Length: 192
Image (cartoon, rainbow, N blue to C red; front, side, top):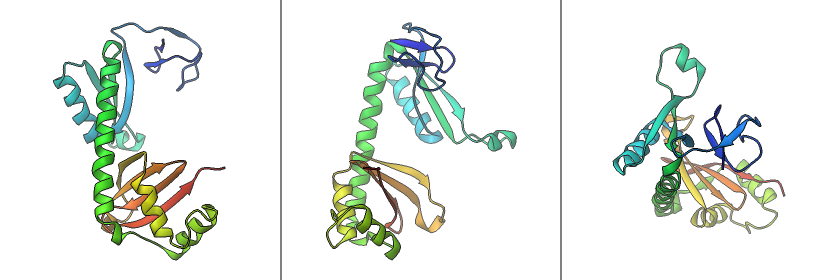
């Protein structure tokens, strides 16, 4: 495994996936490697879990330069772990993501009868799904949510009454749902 000293990324590629640099060296056990970037509260919580399990890690605040210029707290945290703990930390992260997906899927499906789409979005889903949705776009979206590979809380929606944006990914389709109103705000299909 190679290591980019500029980005603190471990990779098996010829170039760094972030800066595209070629100046890579073999990764050392003590090197801190980028594990993930999360919203501040989630990043600090995961860091506490990792530290509590004896995994050396550090967090680095990142985000909008405007926040930095105004001396406001940055909204994200990059989480770095020592290479010797990489696999264990990755497992904790995967377990946390799987638990979040299970929890949010249960929350959404418990309120499935409240899911709705605007007429404009319904028309888009009919067109983009190429007939896969049958005659009920909301039921089609419920089925996609039920089998989603990943569901996470994307943070505050543009409209405070909507709560947070819950984002679901499955088979090249992403769905954004307002956590309070259960309006399906967006359905995006990967190009075929």
